[in-house]
Image (cartoon, rainbow, N blue to C red):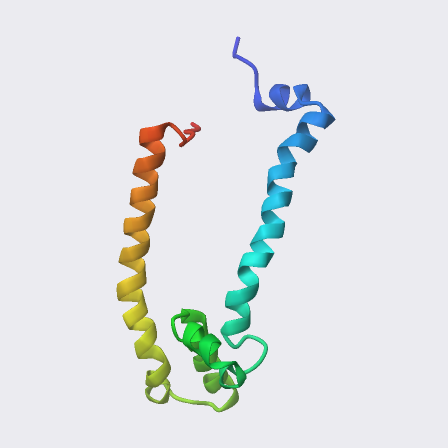
Length: 124
């Protein structure tokens, strides 16, 4: 005879337990929209970055989304070739060579910290 199944475990949950489990995600979603608001505004999603204040234009220059949006607009609207898109593509390549290793390093550091302090929950 096998042990309890996933459906048996699921049936034991009460509605108030499910409600409690969902609250952290609801709070997180609210903060996520606040955190995303600034970067989205500075990338040129809604309007060109040239109309932004100077300090926001500086922020937009370190966001890969700015260059992707500019390149896609020029390719689709103006019919630009890959050669004409190089001014938007080379910053993306530079950012990839900088941000990807930096992200891997930061994630590795955070993972080691979580393992060392016991905050990383392993399932499976």
